[in-house]
Image 1 (spheres, rainbow, N blue to C red):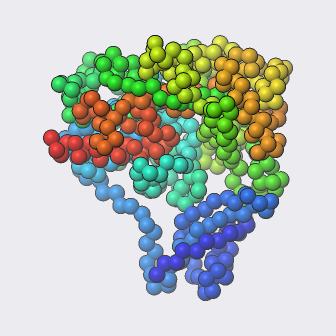
Image 2: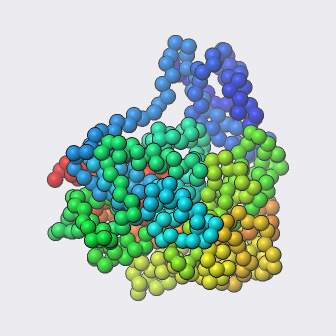
Length: 519
């Protein structure tokens, strides 16, 4: 019978199959043959001065078949099945589509952006020349916002569905096996596009459809019941069920829903800045001065601090990564972070954001559910106005920002379009600026050396999540007043990040199946 064993090894030992085999033999008191164990869990233990690796290993007896616990995905031929429209080809939409194929329903995915390969060129043009394609960028296009912004698969939300299914489905479509056991799994922006394209191939091979560069401008309703969607070119596609998985940046979708009288609600979100340090500094802090060498990954951090009743926290930390432009509209500037699979950039960046509650949103009573969008937009426009034109971002040395000093010169920064010195301490909204400054001081007490002028603050990080929720019934997952409409994912306000969005997409597909079989 398989035996689960916990090991605590040096980074060098944990990287060697022979050393792992030797440690297992010592731990269980018998020799282990080559290939008779499987790693099921791996994490860095940096709590003490001597950094170690924790491994969970499953050891199999000599006469026992290696049978790792992996879900089986059985895709069906759905060419003649009932169509289900999915609006959006991000993780929620793609995983909803894959699950529908398993359930025997035909997904018809409508994506406003381009396929992932065409999208690569538009992202490159945005990085190198500041040319923004409004429908093909870091937010819009096949794979959604996560495709070219890191591909982190870590989630703390594990109560709504089986996150392991998500990891295994990614692995099935080409992601490295390490995502199945790493404590903080990560695919990388250079690898995720191929994985996304493989998912599309699975959907299409079994009879599903994905239509690119098709923008939904309306929903067809009949007596409070979904009957299909209306495209920008005037065409209609009929379906009794529509999965709405449009992501947190599709502001025009919220406006369309409001115009059609479909209920929305404002929700809390967060805004702030992106902070970049030299990766070697973060390594030195997190690894207690120990050299990272060849066997430790680029160090990560997660920080949180309460300041005047609001949380200030790190978001989307990208070790060995880059800051990238994530704008979707002219005259507005948004930044995000990403890493390649090897995480070998000399920079480490993270969003440091301030919780925005409903009480903090200006004009909520008069503007209604979309007031948070206006607050986001004003924040992004302020960043654009204080930048260097185009996608050139405003920036300030971290210690200067905390001490209300302009920065005369800036350190090197990974942001491809470039940065320009700007006094963020003067133009950021006061509640955000004040809480950030206080939190940075607290973060330095937790990570001595974090608050330094070798780090740079870049504005602004505003798309942590949607400020709007599309209300749905918690049991059926249908919109509270429109039968057959299934809002899901980050854009609907029910998930955040790739894994939780994918889980929510699968749940939406299950809900669609139950709904259609009962009609």
